[in-house]
Image: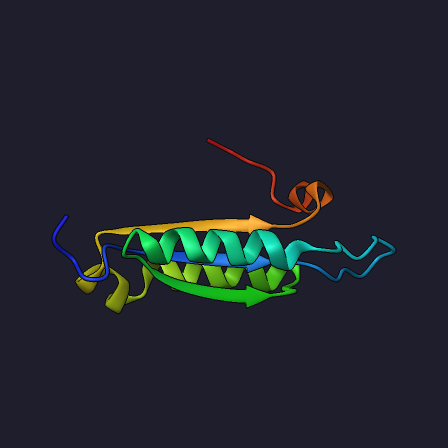
Length: 94
């Protein structure tokens, strides 16, 4: 892998939620550890906080297909630090 940074990691940390879900106390620890790990691996890291399901979907779509991502980055990855309930908004279809 020759790109610099080696890759780009998008971390989405959802600590606060609407709709009656509890605040995910301590999620900043997971976010910080992920960030530290990928920086140590030579990756660029972007962090976004408390996104709605719709904004998350749009952000990942735009971020992963941006021309600058394809020109300068070999790998793109996303990590979501959130309640498991959040994933019910994104049914998987293969």
